[in-house]
Image (cartoon, rainbow, N blue to C red; front, side, top):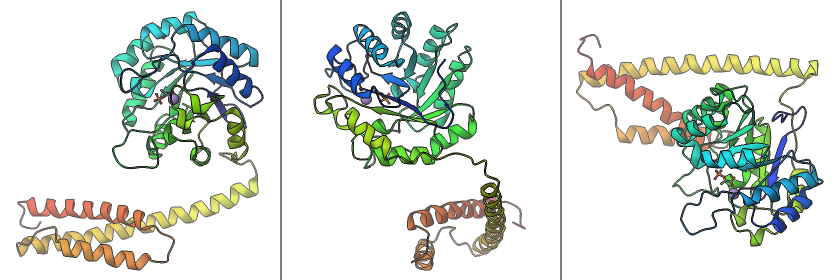
Length: 356
Ligand code: PEP
Ligand code: MN
């Protein structure tokens, strides 16, 4: 029985992006033997963006992974993207299946996979969809739950973005946080390899995932990353993986120490009070905003006045300069307030009521 939420430690998955040859799988597993990993991964059907790239070895590689897993005493996992993959993986005795990001986007495929798995109690991992849509991610997990699969965990592997970013897939941390809020019983494992797309940022992203109380990590490891047939830039040798893991600080989501609990409660009570003050001030600010809306309506003025909006941004930037508040946050915050204010003024402008 695989427990994706072991006590007092993270759940770790490691192994190559793709199983390439028997030698590569065995050599990589040998390197991982003494690391505290729970599951050996290896893709055998690879979803490639363009045709003609290495698309995986297929069924034959299950034997290599099983052999490697048995040698080092670890269960194995492969990606399944359709019902024939499911059938082959189940027949081959794969211990855990994962659904990839390009499959989670497609409810038809997920439903078919779920139905093909009905009646088994195989543990299953669901990667987030490539697009930043938490509903689709939740939907895929629900489809598995609804056929009676209850050992389901999520994998956060980041989201496609057209914007320039240091990451291959933007982490959008708010999305796994929202998944956790909506489905608190589903463990979440972070996959820094596919978020980063390179070796350099792996430790940083893994630490951030831990700090956000994720339950584990999936990291791609290859005995010779430079020669890997897929995702070469983001894979690390088992030695490098060990170094990354040693550099991480595992933190507890909770403390049993009464003194720590009391101090946290005190600080949180202060935050609760401050939040209420901020909300009361916001409500007061919007009251003034609506008065301005009435005035603009009476004098036939536009709601948005560009110079005024610019002036607000510049004035508030100057106000927080040198203080512990980033300009990025300030802009997001003011834009949210401005949007609400425009909405309320628009309601006033459109209202037929003479009092409004
Ligand atoms: C993988 O894990 O190798 C993989 C193809 O991942 P994703 O579905 O996250 O792109
Ligand atoms: Mn990969």
